[in-house]
Image (tube, rainbow, N blue to C red):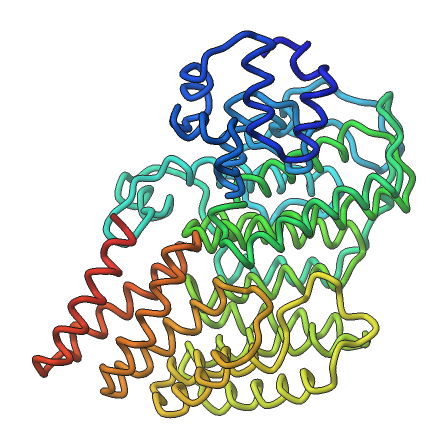
Length: 498
């Protein structure tokens, strides 16, 4: 688009109001373009654009908003949301910049196979880790899929005998945790020819991430994963190319840690576990640079989820225990309870029933205390319903279907304040518990509710749970009546992946 389009005050005003029908009409008039041309650029149909411009339709779905804006090449500074593909990661070969002694220096050459745990815990190596995560995520975008979703980069490399970025092993994770515990965070300030960064800008960057977090809990990661990746690229760019003092530098690193960890969560929920782990490890590094134990514990809590879901359940226990040690001195009962639920899931996945139940009991006691003064603002999900839901999953992993059904029943009844994906996950796991207990009628009824949510939420993880339910239903369908209901449900589940 000509630059004059984005300099037009009426266009800017329409973008600020999210009036995309008006944006489409004015862009066409200023260039000029036909509706067919805008349709070709944005991927929206001409008939839909016509209704949009007439005010008969509103563009509210986040993924379609991004599709529309990126198709038009909208400058990212004109919209609240970061736009994928417009704010790429800084070039690793960019010219060196003048840095203060011991501070962020010129970008290092990025190599996807670099062993992340071996990198020194310096500020510039933190940025390298963030870039490595981005490389891993970009690679995941091009992975082929099979009936179970994306084929992992690790599986492809094993089949082809080639080197690709691999997730850290349990030994590597232990090394990361030990270095996080032992290394001293260096001063984080920077003097360049770039613009001086203010704490107010840091607040705006954090605010954008918080909005993405809210969107995720309602719409699923598919709606926001690309946005988080673009936002992280923007934060890295600010860290590398701006001027700031130590206080502001720590705050920027904190935003980077939170964004990387959240991007990892989005990648994990979208079915990209290798990329997710790379983001989470980079988030741990950035939390160290920010000297923020709570963000480090948060990254470890997500690494624990990765461990009991996609890797070694002992990794989940190790990560959660390390996070708890670092926040033990803080008044953060909800953060400690969150880590304990992750630890419990790791114990359950490893078949350690007594340890799992003990961790869940302690988590419940901490949750009942309410939020503490040091509990972070981003930890919004910890409540009694969360404890019941995690308990249900632990009992299900241990084969105690009766207790799993009971716990999931309490979790489903809890008020989740718009957390549709989490509600869908608990419903899908409850349906599995019913199926494994032999109650296929209850399994089908609960599963139907979960599928209805999965049809409106973009979460590969929820679809994976439903595929597991489908397998349980096929194994348990013995009577004609229950078999018909199970067949209808399994067909709906299959349609989700088509």
